[in-house]
Image 1 (tube, one colour):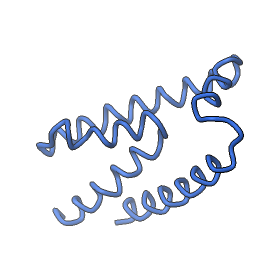
Image 2 (cartoon, one colour; image 1 turned 90 degrees about the vertical axis):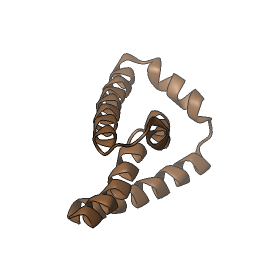
Image 3 (cartoon, one colour; image 1 turned 90 degrees about the horizontal axis):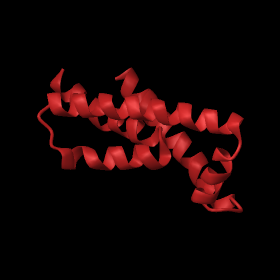
Length: 104
């Protein structure tokens, strides 16, 4: 229950902040990403972030498969992870946390 509430609070707060940031941004998300990759110091952070995102995707896939889920059911989480990194795993924890709660 604590994990689910923590994930939900993080998801809501981070999503609000992300939405506000994107509304106030002076460039597109793709242009921003390209700019980050042009400098070695910021590129290292982006690469590190996406390595963690890949690990989260592997974890979600294994967990989803162990529950008998299909790839179609996992695809929204993977897409969200590819675009917004932490939103996908946080949403997965919120939704699957509800399932875990019902199973317990």
